[in-house]
Figure 1 (cartoon, helix red, strand yellow):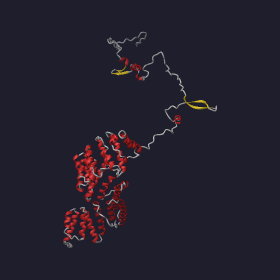
Figure 2 (cartoon, helix red, strand yellow; figure 1 turned 90 degrees about the vertical axis):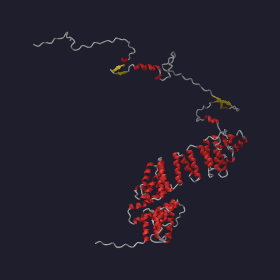
Figure 3 (cartoon, one colour; figure 1 turned 30 degrees about the horizontal axis):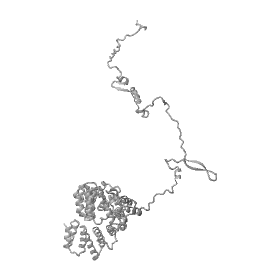
Figure 4 (cartoon, one colour; figure 1 turned 60 degrees about the horizontal axis):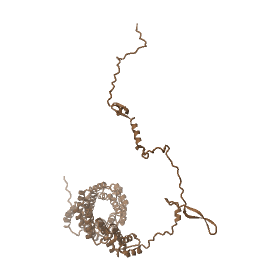
Length: 581
């Protein structure tokens, strides 16, 4: 007998609609979920919470945060802990999009709330305070999970995301070694949670001491094989951008275009996209792409420098110089760096007066920044002296920009103006070169230097002692300035042992023995004793040399030796053999 199931509790139409909206949210059907939620009571707390989760999923973080604020302000219950945790997560992601997000009175009852608050601090740029909150969240997590009797492996899995954030905070503080240690420890523990593993594989190559392109490519490829759908668009954009960077260094143009298009779809044409596109255009030397990428940048100063770089990359130095003169922004017009750049352009195109912009820069900065003005004027004088057609002749003299410490600049001006303006030269020399004293010889003891044995390659004068009688009749020995005659020693001439003055000396005595003619004759005599090997065996050199033999010589025919039957036995004087009886 079949028993009937008891009838279920009746479900209202509103509850059915709410459940359908929740199922649509879990199935990533966000438009359908929002349409169903619009049919329900907008003041119901369940509807408000589900709508806040929907807004978080579709990355409308500001609206989600404001909904949670409304719920926390007007409702209370057992779910307040989870509401505060979700509210902190919404604020963190809102801060990632805009600086208007403010976190007031952060909750710190659970480790999830502390962790989300630390992530907000990281987005706000307060990395030191974020590290303190992350360490606090780590300790709270360990205590809570151990009280709930979790295994050590489960605790490590839960701690992985906290440790990744700690490593990231170290990385933002330029503590690369600490960040690398934390990343390596997490990687060694073999994290299984997909989103944590993706973040780890994306960040790990950035702290490697020896950057390996293949290793980074493998890690990013492994990261993209994970549950990427769980990431938000900003995280997906970071992955696409990093893959584009790897493709850029690999010089793969097609891959760069592919990943840049992915990044553009996720994050739009921001400054990062435009600058990367400009760098790729520079690498490929695509003139149209360089022009388009540089002109699309909104910031005037950045667009100016990018255009200059593009023209230089294409080899158009004269065009870069003209563009720099015409389109220079007002902020950098009278700076030393820009004036030096223009001077470099003028030197490259062989201008007659490349120092002109530096002089103008020095004059304009004379009242506002005297030190930089003096440096610009000194650089102008130096460039004019080296590269200008007439030297420093056309450089105006600005005494306010001269210094007694910079004697090189003063000397260059004096050298160029001494013929035309002698009064100015005299004035400059008295004002800036008066402290330059000529070396005095009054304190130099010449006699002491001459007697000093440390002076090499010099001959000390030899003084002769003479007796001179004084006025009192006493005799004393004094040194006079007369030089003692040098005694020329006669050395005995050394001759060779077999020297014969009657014979004429060998004219080749200075030539090495191997190159003398008699050496060659000896070698010819020795060559006759060599033995050559022919087809008939070893033969002496005497037999091989036919130069001394007569040409027509009858060959003597030797008769063959008698055979055994023709030989006559000589038995004379020998005994006959006895015959047998």
